[in-house]
Length: 110
Image (cartoon, rainbow, N blue to C red; front, side, top):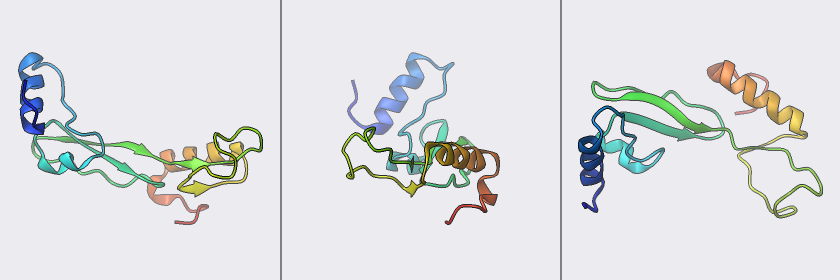
């Protein structure tokens, strides 16, 4: 089997031409435009993914919102977040606001 990105994409397209192929979800190989998806990851706010003549576009990941609850942290006082909020409820509200109005997330600091 091939060990290069373009070769792997070509192999998967040959194995099942009915399915779309995402080269490298959020990674640098996306810039090569060799598969069916322009899949971007943007933190914390979702950015505008752009389709091309051969690819549809999507935001595969966004957010990274953290509400650190004492006794519930993986590593107490050492967890990472792209956007810290005070409570899990505020975190859920932030995700909803980002998903509903990504370019208009006015109550959060960018």
